[in-house]
Amino acid sequence: MNRLSRRFFHAAIAALIAAPGVALAQSYPTKPVRLFTGSGPGGGADQTSRVLAERLSRVLKEQVVVENRPGATGMIANRLVANAAPDGHTLLLEPSSFVAISPHLNAKDGWDPTKSLAPIIQVSAYGLVLVVHPSVPAKTVKELIALARSQPGVLNFASSGVGSNFHLAAELFKIRAKIDIVHIPYRGSGNALIDLLAGRADLMFGLIPISYPYIRQGKLRALGVTATARNALMPDVPTISEAALPGFEVLSWEGVFAPVGTPSAIITRLNAEIGRIVNSAEVRKMWVNKGVETVTGTPEDLGNKLKADYTRLGELLTKLKIKK
Image (tube, rainbow, N blue to C red):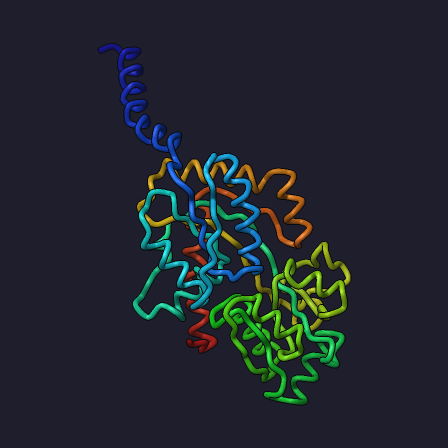
């Protein structure tokens, strides 16, 4: 066999090997797709899920249905998807805290997201905003710290649950500011926000898209953001780093996953379709308007990010002595 013949032979073999995967991706999906999230209705990941589900339904020509499974700080949804048939018809959209922090605190059997979930694509990145109820007599981060130091154990903070990014942000804030404030965990950020608005909680590290409407209406007061730069929606709100605690930073992301064992052809197609949706002008504008950044990438990119954060945050939880 001459060189030219060998080239055509190898190309033919490669095409035959790829053909089943291509056919599988083209025929997928064959029934409605269920997109689970551990976020409660109205939560940040719930909002993201609904934006993606509506548009993914159009391109897949099959209904993509969002199903909320709040509880155990994302672990109910995580396990449900991890144990589902790996055929691409059961997907998961979670914030980073639900897959990189929560398993350390809410899975006593050693459940490991890097071994149980197949990464598809990252869809956003964002910081949090520190908000207080208007009844709290603090207009700045420094004033809040001074108030908390003068009344140790009196102020409380709400979170979407033990091990959430809201919880971790507040615990880091407590340590850096040398203050004593009491944690009140809720089932989901929506429930935490309700009590904060009602004045039953004093403060919270919350999602910018969820908190911003209430900040604008004067129902909550924004003191600082946890990102490295000010948020475009609230340019007058300083970063916590510049306002009081140099170097303070808490960043999060959202990603889409499938059960381990899902065919690579389906993963590849979903990565491409979701990537086009998130990078479209329409969705980019939506992300900007709710104060989050557009970040996508390959399945490998998300897998590497999850592995690095799962390890780093696990070590941080141990160092901070945060336990369920």
